[in-house]
Length: 228
Image 1: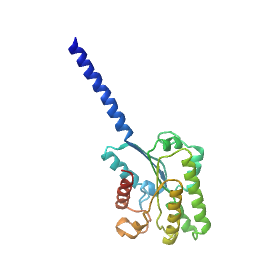
Image 2: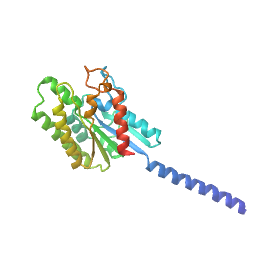
Image 3: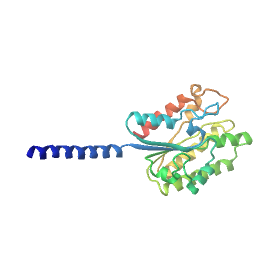
Image 4: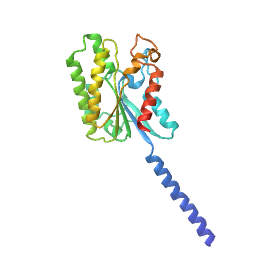
């Protein structure tokens, strides 16, 4: 009889320990959510999505047994920042999960935001990038972060911009300086990828402003250093 009780105690103890270990492991895992435009999706010169820095970061987390979930369904090529703000305001459902965007973000431990490259590149082909265009973009970015911080208090990483078409280096520097300031105001981190623009190895085709997989892999390793 005593041996039965001992065996039962061992089994119960094992179950309890397993539950505790699984609980601790689950708490240490990361849900990664990305918001953004074509760069966030890893768009290529061939107008199809490849592997983005978010995808490579997902792989890194998975390899380190740190990944819980990954969601990029609110990243969309040529998405404008005012459109993303409207998606947030309407609390739009994810196209795959059918979960509202605010609920999706709230669940994340890491939120990456990369938006503006498509919008400003497109605008530059229609005319000069004016002060009004840049100020409106930054105003919308402020609104975006303000909205998110109303319900989300974990890590936000803002990915900076680089020159594209007639959105030139001076414009990119000006915008990035303002994004760094916004990152500080909203307790977020900023990753400057402007130096990558000078490396021809990071472009498959100079007729397109989208960087190649090598650049996205490098960005992912920089993000890894920021979060692990």
